[in-house]
Image (cartoon, rainbow, N blue to C red; front, side, top):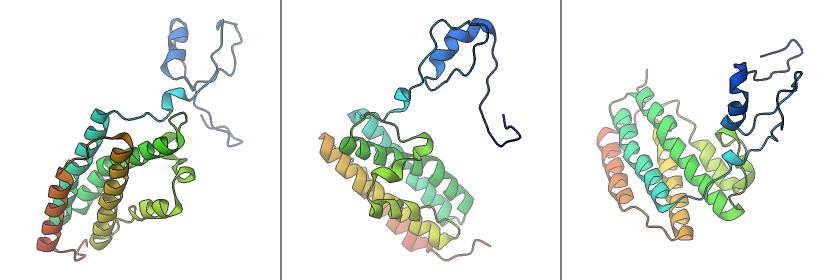
Length: 198
């Protein structure tokens, strides 16, 4: 709901019988008004449900698997000159897993007792400037050459960050990184990077 003074709030209306249950759905809910005094114990908003989580070996493996196996779809899109297909897989899966891995590294270094905010909006505060700049460079996808550069930077970042996470947590780093990375190199060499996205 957007008011005329530009104040915006998320307003939810629900049946009275769901009031107690509603406060369990999201611990960030803040009760602004209870004019009928129906809420016996108003909840105290907390972001605890959104705190960083220390990954298990399985979570780490799943993240690596999702990242590396989806890179083949990005390559497919680039080689077939289907840039929107490549961008979609890059943003929806590859980048998501990279950000997750970076968040775990932040948790390892800073503790797992806080949130990086929705869509990792506070991440910049917790990473070195060089890493941040490299991450930002992965968002330049307006041409095939830029897309290849962004994609390769994304893979390099993921490899570095996930290797450090694996080392810090004494987890096994997947061997298929090298196999898939070599596949990417071969495909790029075979199909080139010329920009014909017209």
